[in-house]
Image (cartoon, rainbow, N blue to C red; front, top):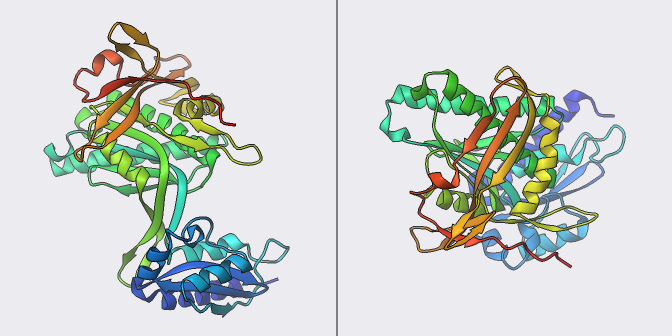
Length: 377
């Protein structure tokens, strides 16, 4: 069994090899494999990686740890010679071995990875540019506190999350570093608690120091990368891709206080895979939200929490749920649902977030009937 000093020294050696292969961003570390106490790295020029990725899915999609066959195929496509690093410990899931996830955390900082399905929230502070700098700082700090508090309260309920964020200047993209279907549901639970905490802060505090939010949640594909500072990439990831672009388009049309949920399809995970649309996904979230019952917010325990996607009329017909179709500045259509969140608490008034249908008069969107999708085969 390797000592702690040997593990630290081995990871430094691995980081040194990745950094040397990376060449300040000229190359991308595409993948790695291990055999015993040796790790092999595949690194190639970024232009070649990005040119070949559309033709060979495994180059950027899936885990960065690869089996021997896949690793050899990727190296061949990218014309890359494997870089072998001998470590003072064995890599694996056995007793006394260092788990592959530890190696992966080092290698990922020097690469780009594609994720097909990931939940992301975009919080936008209304009127941010119109207030004094000190108020801007206070509003950002208030929102950050709500995000941190939500993560803590979910942990108390046994729903651990790792909430990452990147700033947009007047808000944040927020996502769960943990991947998977369950992780995406937990991110929505975090959204519920963040907006509830924000509502309590606005009711109790100096309103100009607590932000009015526009909020969007959706699921989609993206690429993850690590930003370069000086000569080294940061230790945490940034996201860019379809889901972040979609959220930016939606938030551009959202009204103050509105909660928008994108129209998406999220596959469940094996052994039984089903494709769930937005409403079916939120139905699963409703069950998950039962686990936050008893968690205190604003000094009172949560009794229940649920989401309603609002409906309305098209002509003379009333629909229980409506899709709202917006047109972005480039002329592309984007579909979303208008959501309202209700958090009931013991011995106190419920917390309500989101806009009612009659409050959407200024919302630049066309209503479309929601049709229940046919079950997938």
